Length: 228
Image 1: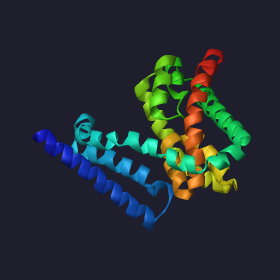
Image 2: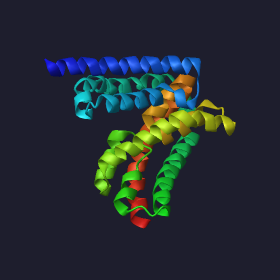
Image 3: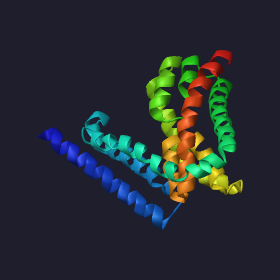
Image 4: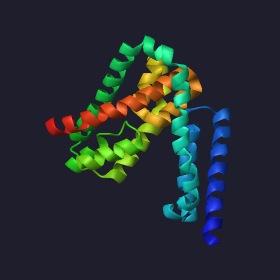
């Protein structure tokens, strides 16, 4: 009974903090008031102040986690609606996804080596730009730390959603295909959720980029780790 009560409380706290974050974003829109960032930071602060262990939080949090699978599958709907556009720009999209995947892997490994990180840490950051399940699998095969890889994936996703649109605006990149390609390859599902807020076309291309880049990165990471 105690576990059930804790589960209900953690779910309730998560929804309340997320709704609060959405209201804050509407009042003062900025990268730092985005719901994905503000709600995550609020939950971490809440658990820290209440001294509730993460394992206890997940008694209820797991029920939210269960819906992630169906949500990811539902992203195929905007992808299907924009299939004519994908066929039209298939060549440019393919080149963009490969270039984005290549840049993500290279910058992660090169940056880690530049700062003198140990091999296991370099192996942990290499797949930072792809969705968590695949990044964890790649990292495990490469010999890195899967828990740390999940952290890098989260950082890449949240930072991409926060600052990606701002950087694209500064660079005057307004075409939905170009925006979707960059966000999808750099910040996977979290960035894709932000892209869907802009337009269905941008979101659909981001979904496609996120999916294909995961396959491309799974080939690129072993190659780069071997030679670098």
